[in-house]
Image (tube, rainbow, N blue to C red; front, side, top):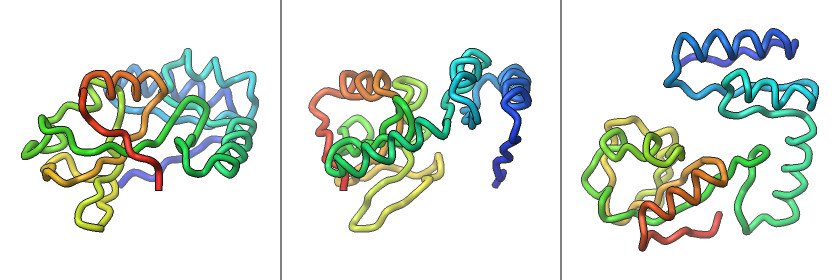
Length: 156
C-alpha cells in the first residue's frame, strides 16, 4: 500500500500533480490546498479532488446538520449507497467498469451485514449486495441514469 505524502507547499503540490498526471493519466489524484485560491489551480493541473481547510470545515458542518442525507466529503464529492443492479450480479468489480463508465468509485460493498471496504478488483458482486460509491455530483447522476431501476439508499 502506498501511503500518501502531503507536501505543505501548494506550489509543490501543483508541480507534483502535473508531473504525476503526465506519468499516469489513469490514476486518481487527490491533493490538499493550504490556500483556497489554489484549489482551481490544482484542478487545472489535473487533480481529481482537491481538499482545502475551508471546504473541509464547511462540509463537516453540512454533514452534522444533515446526517441522513448525502454525505459530502469534499466540495462536490459525495458518498452514496445503491442497491445491486442486475447487470453487475456475478461480475467482478473490474469487469463492471463502473469507474470508467460513470466516474464513481466503489469504496465498499455491504454483504450479509459485513462491510467489505476497499474491495479488490476481483471481488464478485452478489444479488443482495449494496454498494457504497464515491463521486462528484455529475458522476452520481450519470451512475443513476446509466443504471435505471437501481435504488439509491439513504446513508446509514
